Length: 446
Image (cartoon, rainbow, N blue to C red; front, top):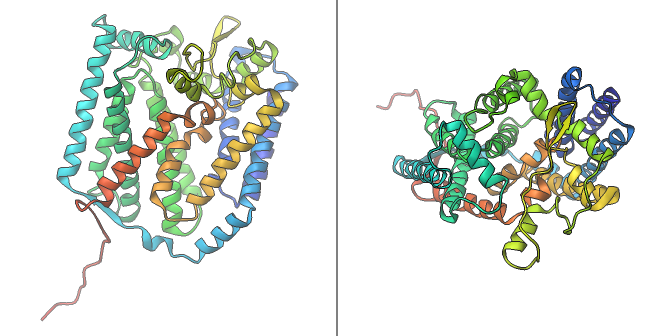
């Protein structure tokens, strides 16, 4: 049954790729690829799990992806999208790419701010956990206290500083990619420093999800700017480069597991392939297990799907309910813990059934497809940055839903506002000068 699912997903991907302009980055293509990767990982782990899949799981995943594809196709074939693509082809988009130079003083200020944020976050960890042992033990306790509980949290001010650091990271990520595509790596390494500092700060939270958001944003920004510069799609060479980059990112994901508190026997003893395959592939058998043994019906409207919105309403006193965590239940099969991620379909199915699932997936796909086809065919940097920080919902859909539970939130709105402010300060300000590199004339002046 798992092989049947793999074949069905490959067929859906090929259909999506060839009918959506042979663009790997169309939302339907990215989402289907994420599911294919998860299924491949599940196949790799099948020798150990020995799990028997059911037809219902195959049908729901296949039909869900077809709905996502149809929404993407409808958007792609719409008159607005067709007109925008035709207009963009006539536009010399590469002429609008300019090297961005942020002043040394301004760059130093934001780096110092990020260092202060990192320091204050570490102080918050010590305040909550105390000095109880090794870094791994401290991070494990901190994550349990803040991520799996609702009574303890980092101070509001430090959290907002972390949001500002995130905005600084995203804007510098854009500047770095933009400049490297135009003039190469030389003199642009300094823009990597804010990116690294934010990733280090995000790892102190005890999770790696924020780092994945940055990685996904970087891939999307690179794709759009590369197409804008070259006036053609991603080549096989670039695809191989992106695959290598993703593998390196997964190696980093694996390398920091103990540092951020992943102290289980499996985390410590598993090989790289086994660890990543289990992490990504677990969503497929878990979704099947959920369908065979569902949990109790949701007590709040959209309890799983609209987690972030519901908790905001609870905090404001608009929704009469207790705060709850976003994490779903862990499940064990034959003595092996498979985790607690159930693909991007579980939450919608739990809250609204199969019809609600199809409607919400259609809306999700259409919104993201409209956004992508807009940024793909215009030169609006702000729109590209906004889409970039939401794009992880496409890359991770095979693992979990992020669009309704995380992207649609007050937190994301705050991040968007901060990204716009930081972009204006760094790029549009007088000190953040933009220049076009010019070749020196070889003629001698008399």
